[in-house]
Length: 193
Image (cartoon, rainbow, N blue to C red; front, side, top):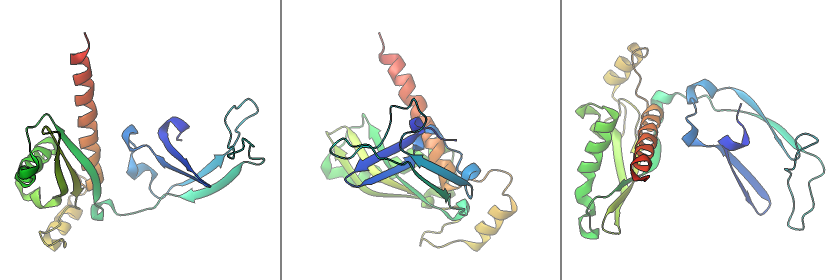
């Protein structure tokens, strides 16, 4: 069950969009293929929440519908996100020199083998304010070769050892997210007088 604190809701014009907040640590494997229902409007007699138009008129009847989370093979999925490395001396002229350094840092954080370097793709690398490097990271599926295809040998090894420790891109992203949150907490504790 997800409550409104765990959802990101955006109201724009005549549209309402929502998604599960990825920072809460959703176990993607647990919800894949599961059905869910949505009710939007005034929930319960004491509710102060509702949907209003630009003139302040409340919606008369709640909107209700059911959906199903996609059921995908995570060993074939990739994930992309923005990666920010702060407090690093950089300049616009040397954007490309940070590619290997960032890949190495990500691999170290994730505990990946050097053979997994090809699974990390960096695009749109840029330096901001001479001390922050920002890039889009794409984590490719296990067994991806340099050309972007699949290595049949690696894929078969992965399927035969699936119970040991699958390192699909979503679990790697979650690991980076969790490490980032721990680091942010530690930094805030250190800066508190």
